[in-house]
Image (cartoon, rainbow, N blue to C red):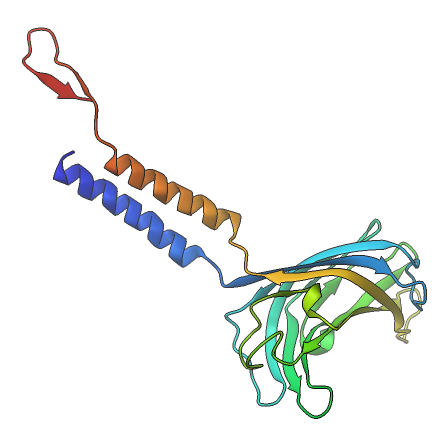
Length: 232
C-alpha cells in the first residue's frame, strides 16, 4: 500500500466519520400503547386499541427555576387509534420535582395551540383533536437527578402514575368548543436514545472504507515478458 493511497483512503474514512458525528441528532425516541378507557367522555369508542411514537430533541435547554420548561422539544407525535391517525409537533415538555409531600418526579408533555404546538386529525364522527397531554410520575430521583436536565430515558416500570388524555371539539358546531375528553389507558411506555438508521448506515460505510484501506493488496502475475509480480 502506498502512502498516498493510505492517506487518500484515510481522508475519505475520516470524512465519513466526521459526517457520522455531525449528522447524529440529539434525539430521544418514545413509544406508548394501550386502550381507550370505557369511561371516556369523548367521541372515541372505549376499549379501542392505540399505539403511538414521538421524538424529543434533548438539545433544547430547560427554562426554570422550579418547573423547567423545554419549549417545542417534543415532535413527530403519531398516534393511531383504531383506524384513526392523529399527529402533533412542537409540543412542550416540563419537568419538576414535588418535594412537599408526594416526593415525586413529574414529567409532562403537552400538544395544543396554547403552547404553540401543532395538532391534526379528526374522527369519522367529525370531532377534531385540540389537545394531547401526558402526566407521568415516578418516585423522586427515578426520572431525573436534576429537573433542569432533560431526562435520558425510562419505561413504564419506572412510573407510579401514567396518564394520557385527549380533548376534542365537535367541528360541526361553530362558535363553541366542547372539549370532550378521552382517557388513554397506557400499558406500555418507553423513552430511550436510539441511533437513527441513517447514522448507523454512515458508520457502517466508514468502517468499510477503513477496512478497504487497511486490507493488503494481493499479488498477481506480471504481464508476459515482465519481471516479478504486480499488485492488484
